[in-house]
Image 1 (cartoon, rainbow, N blue to C red):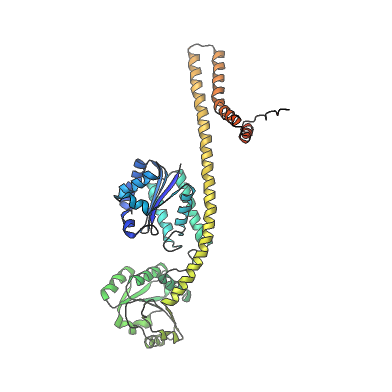
Image 2: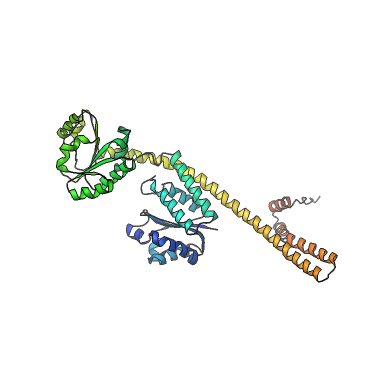
Length: 421
């Protein structure tokens, strides 16, 4: 069987096209069934996320049919798909799916979410009955490789977004992060990302302060957090170990005096502050206070840049690991082909035996002499079993293929031909 992968992702297509070819959970089962029926594939898995749609198939009528099927299924012009997609076959499919699951093909290098998404896609396909022996082996091997890349390289060890970097810094300063109280100033996309990372780290006490209270309440509901107005900041700043701010204010919201007062009320227990806003939300002079640790977006960008460089090094290590695993999988696949040939050969031999035996039994029942029946049976069975090997030996000899002739002779335990003197 031939592995084929057809994909469209953030590198090859704009959002408008990616949205058109995405599969919803409701349409996925029908799509897998349609692939089997219309394209004639033996196995199929569809990975569909906000950044990519990829169709993995085993067998089928070829790439041309797959392009036509995807265009027809989503009612999209075929040329749009062909001009904004990529196609892999054979070992390139194995390499690609391993790279995808390991986060090497993601918008953010090394991001971990894609592995879970590929696992879910595989699970959906398996429940739909479109996963057989080869895809079972391929995807389980892929998950094993992705785990190996995660544990044996630094591909996901360092933050590569300012939101994640802010939380990672907080984790370094306060070892027991879940026990710390956090104040988020602002309610935009950046703060939402910060909040998500904080919840993943197990932070229990969160508060959201924003100029628009309704916006703060909307975010707070999803976090089970408190709500403050900006005017309440001076009064409540003392209650928080970590302050992360990102607003569109043109003037600083948190000044040196406000932080100094809060530190006195906290009896000089340290405060970690992160200013992700441009212009600044927190006065730079806060850094002059001995128990205040202030980081700006520029500080975090520098960390992110260093971390990206570190991930690039890890990615090169991961690529080497994947190359080795592709070779390993390819060897397994070839061994399966050999096993299949052996199985076919044995089945063919047994079929000849059964047919000839049935004929002999019928002749005996008709009263034909037993010795004649046995002689005919042995003659025909010998011819049936010898026909294929004899033909290949003859062809090898005619082509003067010494290596093949010798190999066949060894395989059939034949004495080497005598050399002419």
